[in-house]
Image (cartoon, rainbow, N blue to C red):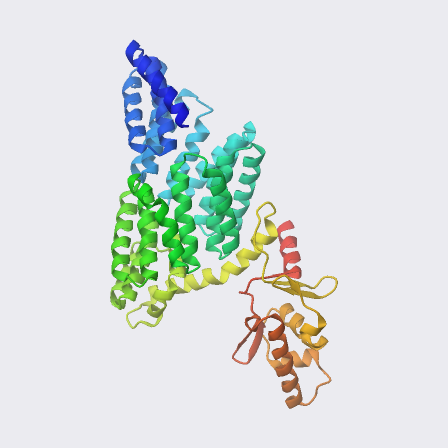
Length: 512
């Protein structure tokens, strides 16, 4: 890319010296695109502005005029000026349609969809993406299909539709690799990393980020390098490795600040605030969160700004100012932005600081309902992680901690090692485990004993046998595997496991 920029600079000087406006407009249009791809946003905007001037009233240059509108829109988008960006992209799309520039129409549909998604207009974004995908699918354009499928994956992730996101990413990855497009491979792998990070599959997230970095590190792509640094730092933060999170960010922090992108700077301050909060510096965190909110709001990214508000409330709690935290969350509820998935995710990840608000005397019904939604998200994550393992073939995910095989020989693996009868100690213990896995409702020890050991008539002996077998079961597969609440026992389906019967039933349901 830098080499092509040098050639374009030479061409620009020659056309300008000749007074050749047609050649100059074409050259500067190409250079504006190159500048945008290199992250030189100020230069890209200057070039786009000149092309608009050179092509405005010239009928044969209207395609260049549309291209300049598109470049300006996408540059403003990268700078985080989302509301301004959508106007330019919509104007470019209208002009391309009038000019019947069929090759450019799906591209602008894709980019308009990206801006709609950033603005939280998800239905419009999905419609634009699907129109673009349909055109490129008919044309057999693998590169462009991969591009729009990546964006569909990001959209579905934004909506909390994890399985749809993974399947879109997977299909996009297949197209990118069939078309030998390394940058899109890296871009999709980064989206997958974000998805797995939210689902708590840290190893899979790390592998995807490392794969993307191995591709991008030899390219002069500042946006991707910046985003990967932010993503890897966020992953370290989720692992509570705060020193690594700060060190990873430090390598790119100056470059991000100098880029003048309100979106990237918003992400930077959001992450710096979380790191400061984890380091026990809530005052510093509040300042960073305030700056992140400012950057996101100025760029029209209301969903991201709302998620930062959640973390600002967490910083208030860390300061001991719970009343202020309640007020922040109540204002978020009133703004109607609290239903965005990114807000639920932020609430889920900030529970260490916000958990005390659940019992706060001024927490009203609306706030309690908000926490109830977060609990539902937390309960869905283990099942979503299992579904991804079952449905997604190309993407490599981490093996589950517990593997249960009921078809054929009854076998159980813990951390990759298959249990033997000596691990169970008795056949009865293994039978108890498989029974608890198979039942859908919690049962008392008496109900379990009646099914498994009907010959055990004396209640004290049944209870003693159950106690001993349960103790051995928990030693074999882990204490957290079996839950006990209000005299009822059940298998803990929130742990990291795979059960072949459930997988089979999932496949059958999907086939139907």
